Structures are given as structure tokens and as C-alpha cells.
Image (tube, rainbow, N blue to C red; front, side):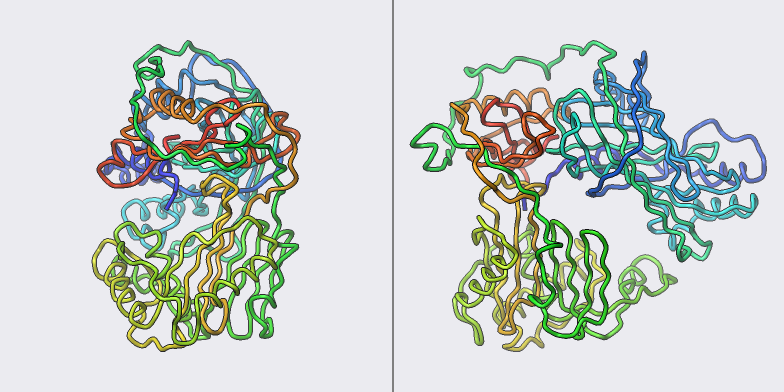
Length: 605
């Protein structure tokens, strides 16, 4: 699986150095009693997620002698991180948005090396209310019985206010008023002695590049929590707003080891696979293409997936949700189509958490997933699970009631209806009875018994499978784009003799008309040289052990004039092994613009 590791790196890095705070409850209770609070911030929350969206709020910019962002990250992430941010471009913002009963103020942002870092303050509009950072709220049914939770409940009771959960996270980023693109983002929230919450975030990914002005859409979330551990019905408030800012340099960058020059002579001469299209072999270049934003919401029809009556339908601009008579569910968004089968049997999705974490946790009822849904999950886990059934491979082109050719044809028919082009079959697995039963047993052992995994999904006896449950799990990949989760389309199907019983389809951009062809491109060797340059100056001190492949392909990026939208640009995708990957057996990657050599995205950012 080609997931970007930086989110896990953020999680690991941010947890490192955080310790239990045994005096937290005493300080909050002391505040409720009116005693003098301890002058020290309390860390309560860490939240990671990948989201997207768009809206508007305002702009501001100023010079700083010292950076609030650098100071905050220095305190919680360490001196090196703070010093590194101090050398970035800084902008004071000060824009405020009221979401529910909370006023959010973005205080400052820093831009450095294709990353944006921000710090802001959330305050209750009514000082009687008590703010709860998101990670505590996410598990409030459990945390409400801890010393921390009890202290906050006592504080709200003493003041006669509400418990309100808060969160703020970047959703999308624009550069120089160009297309707003979804971002990878991490957030870290700290409850302060005065009852406010300091929220911070880091955002990165291919959406970010060097520019003069930046537009960041922030998503705000608030909800009231009951002392019984439940979110108060109807209290959830979601709001988005976009702030524009122009960060500027306020400090000299220190020359350090990460800035050391990389010369072609210093790069190891090693054999790696060079992958280029025939057009490049013939002409030495490949063209730009228009990048056409996809919108399944105007294409997909529910009857393509299920011809039974629709029992429930919810829709909004660009989104739709259908529940069919047989309880199957179809989700449609501009870039996504998801279809799965369910039953009419109610199921408590808190069952496993109750057994492991909290015996008093109340049920969370929902329709039980169908057997087909879980078999598809087993097959999918074989594809992306690190050690799960890693030697499993495609074997049979004919099952009891279905052939591989028929399954492939059904998948291609669906992709044609969805107007997907440029997709090729990149992975397949035959799920016959023996494989369903054997892999199902391993799946249960991993998720329910080994301690390595944890899931609240229903547990099934895969020995009960019949010939009608057999099928093919097929994955098709958009081959016209670099293999990055944010940009490359994919279509996964589990197909039985009944047809498509599970689908997960994603497509962000389709390749449109050819626009222009650059006279020349940088060489594959130059792309490798750029990799060594960028890793040498990276924040985490990445070390390249071995370059495996250098592939010339396309990727949707902002046009040179960013207001002109998106284009599929020629890029070199370099796959390599770094120090950690050498030990753990996974590959890293970086993508460079093949025209000007600029870094577009990398796993180390």
C-alpha cells in the first residue's frame, strides 16, 4: 500500500516526549473551586485525519520578531522543530470564526518546505462553558469516567455551563488563488488554564508549493457532550472558512548539515529500473494534458448497483446516500462511489470495545454487514495488510459459479458507465471456498485474537461459506497518473455470481485534451540527483539507501498560472529505500516535475 507515512510520523513524533500528567485533574478541580491555577498549559489532545472542503473568511499579514508557531512547536515537539520553523516564512493572521458556541481565532501560520503550520485559540462564547479537546471527546464515554473527564464535568457543573468539544483542521489549500486541493493534515490541541484551547496543525502534500499567497480552508467542529458520555442530539455544528495570508521571512536560515551541497559525483552509481513511455523514447518529451475534475454525483445511478426499491435517500449538492430494499448501501460523492451489502439484523458495533476497554459502554446499533462485505474485507486486507497472508496469490480463473473473464467484464462495464478511462487491472485475487475459509480464519485471529489488530466489525464463521459466496476481488488503477493516494484513481470490486456486491471507486481527475508539449524534460539521472538534494535538506534527515525505479508519468498539478486550474504534468516518480524501509521492507517515493525539476510531493514531507 502506497500510503503516505508522514501522518504516522507526525503521530509518533508528537507522542514522543508527552507524558502522563497526574496533576491535571487536581488543577482543573482547583480552578472549579476558585483556587489559583497553576501557570502551565495542559496537553490533552492529539487528532490525525485526511479531509477536504472550501469557503471564505479574510486575510492578514505582519512581520514578527518571534514566532508563536515556532514557540508552540518548540514546547511540544522539541527545540529542533521550533528552531526549524522559526526560519520559515511567517504570517500573523488574527481572523476569527464563531462555530456553535465557540470562537476560533487563527493566530499565526508558518510556511516552510512545502508545509504549513498553524496555531490558534478556541474560546467559549459563554465563559461558563467548558471546552473539551477532540481526542478526549472522541472517547468521551470512557474518558468521562477518568480523572480528567470527571474534573471537566465538575468544572461545568460548578459554573452551570455546557461541556463542548472542539476541533479545527485544515481541509484544503490554494496557492496564489489557484485551485483549492485537499491536504494531509495533523492537529494537536492543548487545554489552557484559562479554559481556552490552543489548537495547532500541520498540513502538507501535493496541494502545497512555493507561492506568494496561500488560502487555507479550515474545518471547525463543535458539539455538546452530556455527562452520561453521549453527544447531545442536534448539538453538532460543522463550519468551514477560508483565510488568505502572505507569509514572509523574518529570520536568516542557518547553514547546517541539511543544506550541504549534493553533487552528481557524490550520488552512488547504482542500477535502477527506468520506466518511460514509448513517446518519450521517440521524442525525448511527453505533453501536458488538461485535468478535468471528476464528479460522480452527476454520473452515477443507483440502479447500476442495485435494482431493488430504494427505502431511504439523502442528498445534498454533490453527495447522495441510498439504502435499498435489501439493505445494501450506496454512497456517492464527486470523487467517490462506495457500495456494500448489509442485512436487516441490528448489530452493536461497540461490542468489541466493551469487551476490551469499557464494560459499561452503551451499544452503538447499526445494520449488520452482509457476509459478502466481510469476505471483500478479507480479500482487501490480503492486498494492503503488511504481514497478513503475504504469500497469497491469484490461482484460479474459474470458480464454481463464475469465471475470471466474466468478473473482469462486469467490472469494466461498471467503469464504462462511470466514464472511467485509463484504468488497468493491477491486482486480483480469487476467493474460492478453500481460500475464504483459510483466509477468514487468519483474518479472525489477527483482528480478534492476536492483539495486533482491533475491529468492532461483526465476527463471522467463514467455514459457513457456500459456492455462491465465491468471487473475485479486482483492483483497477488509473495508470495515467503517479501512484499517489491524493491523485491516482482506483476502482476495487468484489464480484460474485450475483454481480458486483462491493465497490470502492475513487477518481479525482480525468485526463482531458493535450495542451502543449515541452521542448525537453530533465533526465532520469537529474531526478535521482534531485532526490538526494531534497532528502539531504529534509526536516527529518532522510537517508537514501537505494533507488529502485525512476518512472516518467503524469500527475495532476496546478497550472503554471495557478488561476488556470489543473493540468496533468509530466513527472518523474522515484521509488527508493530509506534507512527505516531497509529494516522494515517498504519503499519510499518522491515525485518531481519533469520540466523544471521541482519537488511536487514526497513521503518524507
